[in-house]
Image (tube, rainbow, N blue to C red):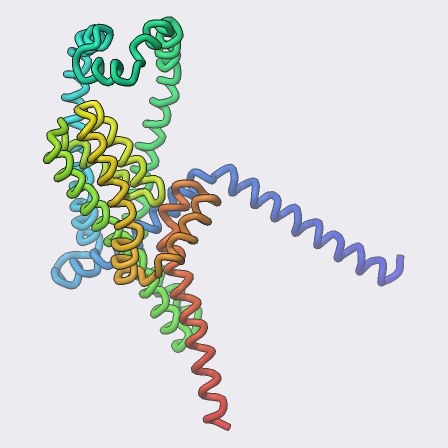
Amino acid sequence: MTRADRTLARRTAVVLGVVLLVFAALLLIYAIRRVLVWILIAAFFAVALHPAVNWVEGRARWLPRWLAALVVFAIVIAVLIGLSTLFVLPLIHEGTRLADQFPTLVSDARAGRGPIGGLLERLHLRQYLSQHADQIRSYASNLTRPTLGLVRGAASTAIGALAVAVVSFLMVLQAPRLVAAFLGLFDDRRAERIRRVGRDCARTITGYLTGNLLISVICGGLTYVVLLVMGVPFAGLIALFVGLVDLIPLVGATLGAVAATIPALLHSVTAGIVVLAFFVIYQQLENHLLQPVIYARTVRLNALTVLIAILAAAELAGILGALLAIPVAGMVQVIIRDILAERRSRRAAGPASG
């Protein structure tokens, strides 16, 4: 075998080895994709909570960093538990009351009485339901089959939330050491540039969370006012759900509109029309006024960039991609802006030095 043949065989073996390594890495990523998603979400929250921990540590210098991080995480968890309690307890109470009143509601619906019976009578659905009672009954019985799957999903969600909280806490706790070790690999000028870009990226994530929460609070508050004026029952519970789902880009406002319009329509046709009209108008205001103004101040992204980022990320990674689209787009914008500024400074320094 000649030297050229040996070189060709060596290069072929190297290429095949690289391909096999890439394939094995992709298989590994696919196998641990859930853990990687948890780590990504944990990093997202760690970056968002890092300034709060630094603020507490700076104000109370006698506190060690782990205790400052524990205080911040305890406050965040308490707020989340409080919101969950505000939502879950009324839901359990009303669900129990609905279960007690369910036979009466069914008999009233069959007789054409009550809000549900009146709605079925107006839409001429009572005759259809009576003719297809067996099919509806069989469909309702099939709904109980995926109960085990729902229990498993709830357990997996609880484990994931716990893992995200623990990993986020450890990331925040070890952040100064990790950052110092990473920046120590570069010279002072490049390390300062990386530190500045990283600070701007962290500010983008914090601004996105702040802006998203502010928009959700506005949506939930306005929904509560409209439902309260129209006399829709459980206005506070519905408004809280609308505010929570409004955190999801693109589909959140639509889900909230459906969840609020159906109870309003069951209460009265007028209330349903008013609530539906409110959500149509509000979505236009949110998309063209609230989001551009708030995100322009917090994330510094224009409306077109926000929309394109959300659509592309939602197509690639679903709801998780939609949630992370805006901060990722903001970080990309920060990096591109820094690269362009560096190039302009080099071009300006070139003729001057010449």
